[in-house]
Length: 345
Image (cartoon, rainbow, N blue to C red; front, top):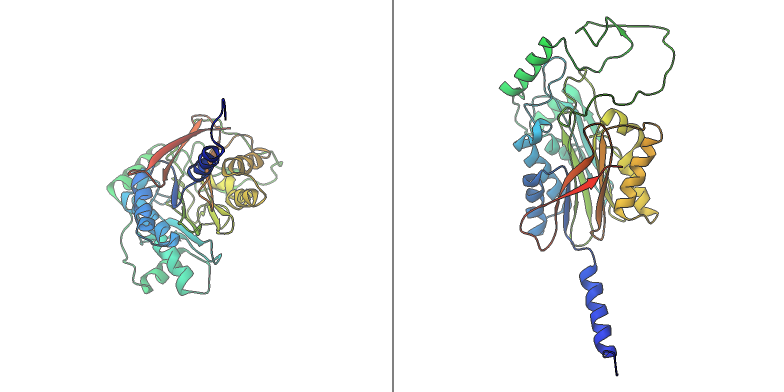
């Protein structure tokens, strides 16, 4: 054929392009550049382990590493100075979930969450009872306080307990440690926007998605919650559909950021449903963020998404001091996790 190539070569080139342009599996994607956790999960998948095992191993590594002080023991003390832990894990094949919140004295929160899923007919255990359950399952009882967390707490007390999470109380929570009493009869108002620059280490989590070579999906989260939270507070991380969500017929998602805002909208569930309706992972994350922004225009938060074929993406909400979101990915052909970044919308 003059001026052209062989039809056979064109067909072969098209077939090769189709093969190599397809997303590759297995895949691990993690909120924030928590590379050691991402690598720990990848090693499980690489040797043929299940996505559920990978998520547990990866989140447990972050608990050991005390990632950014926002995961595991020794971080984010509450108003009484105690560190408590929240975690969840979800099997996208069976739709089973195990979750714990306000877990005390037990370092391996993600492990306890999986024990709830596998050794009880329940889904969610909280507080002291969750800790007693963990001890009955053989988890070691340990002090979660460290010199660092005690120092954070002591400094907070000297600053008149600033910042805190109280509102509509007396004395003025912006100037006092309390104790507080409610102020009655206040008019209802719209949610206020963030005025100060976001402290990325004040309340955060690891969220993880693992997809094996057959497209089976699992997700999980682990966190020590918001710094200086009111004791008993539970954020979005252990909430099914808020912190993470997995459905192996579609994919998975995980969220991070201001849990008290994000949990109201179940963004991880929403993102998975967006993918079910045909959105690619990036668009699915963006739509879930945009839905929150309709009600709360400025908030600190991000979502990661991956579908069962290995495509992935992320999105974040722009806030003062938070204009880009970094996350960690491990996929075939790499010897180390890849740090990716997305501009916030």
